[in-house]
Length: 441
Ligand code: GLA
Image 1 (cartoon, rainbow, N blue to C red):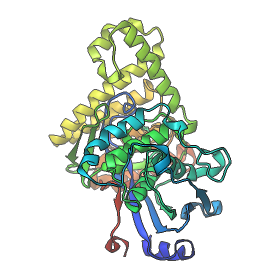
Image 2 (image 1 turned 45 degrees about the vertical axis):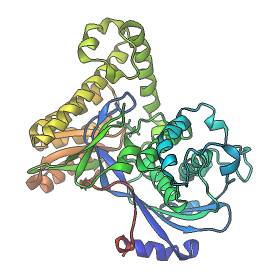
Image 3 (image 1 turned 90 degrees about the horizontal axis):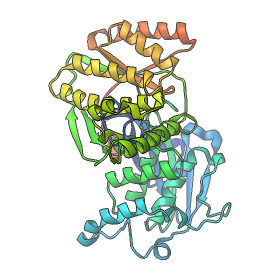
Image 4 (image 1 turned 180 degrees about the vertical axis):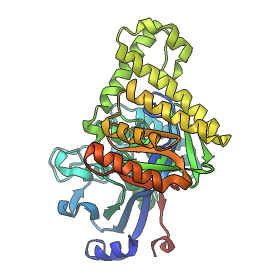
């Protein structure tokens, strides 16, 4: 794929003076289904992702076109530049004074916590300025949601843009194509309008849009990883404080490999929100009977086992056990990587999968088939990654045996499931960035 050719192909849509932006997808090495319960996660950004080719417009319209969904055509969004009217205080500001810079984070958090915020963008349904969610708008809902919340936050968007999207992440594969698109559009707005915000704030806005606009109660992992990752490193993120560290991805004689079940699913129609609900039920029980806490990860394993009887529902107890043990596994895995102990790392991956399969119940036959086959053919670790219910696995295999293992797993999967899995080598990449002209050549 050549970026210049894509720009050329869409010359009529884009015109000249094009800027190009890229955001990766992500794969999580360990720490699954704990980012909405204050847990520690350990993702990396991958070298597949989403590109935006952008040119300026003179009017108040955004024109969207996707090279991947040409049949969907060009979608036009008209908007009101709300800057002066909607908020006296600027939450996101294009003024770069030191004072603003210092005030930024507190203002920004107040926007995320303001319950009335969602009602402030005055766009009567079905008017030409309507930035609300509609199923019929398909993928364009993501950019619409981002633009809506940037406008509400006080971003000054004096004129519109033409935005052509091209992505090479496999669709609905659990490699965060949604987060990649959300962060991408935010990055475009940041640069095109000189908005004074940074990538960690952008991750927060994107999570907010996913929760409030797309109605998926996800945690912060995907948006943060897509925005903030670093080449050749994994991102160790504490989702309760957003403290993070970059850990060199030394894997010795072993390599990670991503395998796509090619069983697609979307979080909106999976049981993802149901799991989040079950965690809320568990927290009510814990708060009433053990101690007051914000997140399940604040409960120690000891306190959990000592108080097992408060969970009269075995399913709820299982969910809690997964979350607390997975959080601990992530800590151990980071230590193992630092100590270059890949056998230990692989063992923790295996335990993580088994816990997701039996306690959290987010695996499925396709994922288990891949994991079992990888383990049978010599992987030292193999697990589902991401939300589950389909999507991808990540496995740790001897680099010298990769081709042989892939051939065997491929054949097992086809025999058992009836269609092919796809395999992707893993390279840890940088997060979101504006591309320079030499990157585009
Ligand atoms: C999805 C969500 C994340 C996280 C993972 C599971 O990718 O978007 O926030 O919860 O599932 O770890």
